[in-house]
Amino acid sequence: TMPLLIAGSGEQRTLRLVARHADIWHTFAGGDDLTRKSEVLDAHCAEIGRDPGEIERSVLVDGDPTATGPELLAQGVTFFIVSVRDLNLEPVRDWVRWRDEQNNRHHAP
Image 1 (cartoon, one colour):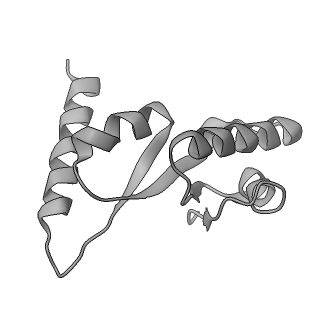
Image 2 (cartoon, helix red, strand yellow; image 1 turned 60 degrees about the vertical axis):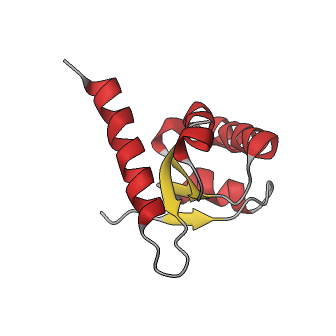
C-alpha cells in the first residue's frame, strides 16, 4: 500500500483524521506545542484502538541537527524534512550525517 501523509495540527479535526487514516503526521508545531499535540494525537488513537506508534511523526528542520535533532527524537519525531535555501545542500549533508550517526548508535552490534 502507499503511505498517506497528513499535515496539520488542528486538534479536533486534523488530528482525528491522522489517528484514523495517516501513516505519517507532518506538523509545523515545535517544542512544548509539539509535545502537547502529540499527546492529543495519542489520545485520539486510544479512542479508536489504534497504536500511535504506527504513525510516523514528521517536521520541517533546518540549522544544526545536533542542536535540535535529539529533542525532536525524544518527542517521537523520526521523519525530517530538511529546508534548503539558495540550493545550499550543506544542511542536507549535516542532517544525513547526523541521521546516520543516530542509526549507527542505535543499531550497532
